[in-house]
Length: 104
Image (cartoon, rainbow, N blue to C red; front, side, top):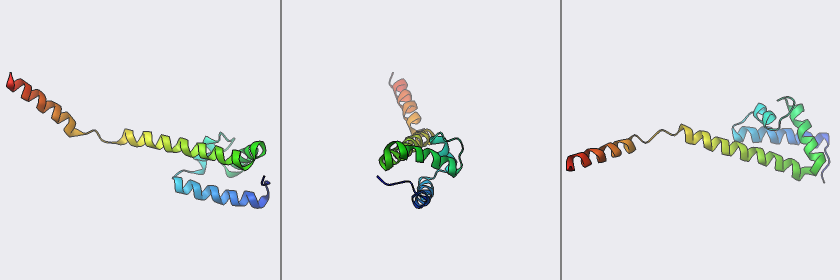
């Protein structure tokens, strides 16, 4: 099991910053998702260090993967809500009703 060293922490900070940038999220988003006492990096690292103590690198990485999955599913829900309604779908229904009325 890898130990939590200052070098490890420094590399982790760089990895987190790159990861957040690639995900389009902020440090504040991560802090909230981790339920850290603050959204500042020391508070985030404190939570991650606790995860690391409890289960090593696998547990810490699993927690970050869970957060990424949560963000992805939330993003997909938001994207679906922002999709415009199909205006022609309503027109098709109206056209069917008009045709039905004309045939009768």
